[in-house]
Length: 218
Image (cartoon, rainbow, N blue to C red; front, side):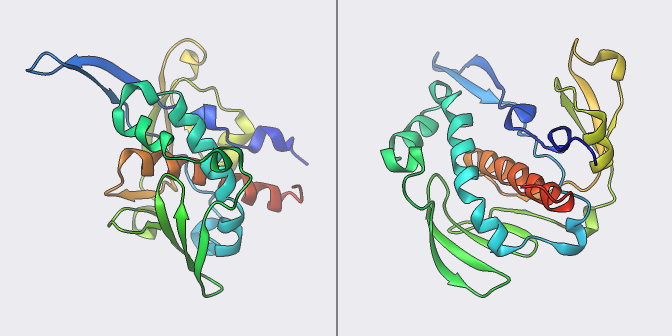
């Protein structure tokens, strides 16, 4: 049996990177962010999709990890600071439920009052954010498309193999950013920054749950 720790994604593998400051015409400065990299979904999910009950059990972890990401850049954008200020102490510590299930149809459902993102609809194909057209989904039409992302992370070989990813510039590992290639990437549409960070952390949590079930570990 493989070392399970080498097969798990971590939030730090896909860090949020601010760039700037830049100067507007009025002389005020602002920051932007590099593209949020969402890890690929586990290959088995192309057939299995997203399980509502499993997804629901991962919302707490997703919110906590999203808070941690946003706290690292809250001084870079007012909307992030305001979103964090709206959180109650219980929401930050996990002492209250992370959402209220409004509809539960077994295979899919809706969860309202999810901190930071208002609410989500969880379907077999992924997340749909309530109150907007934003979504982060598994789209079979794009599944075989090779995509690349730049990263400083040195992924364990076992993890690369599990997800069918390939380090295109291994000679740069640990020295500078390089390109990593793979398939099975989530399709994101109309997501705002905080929704994008939430999607990243949901993908990490769900992927890790799939791997733990596959190898019989919790």
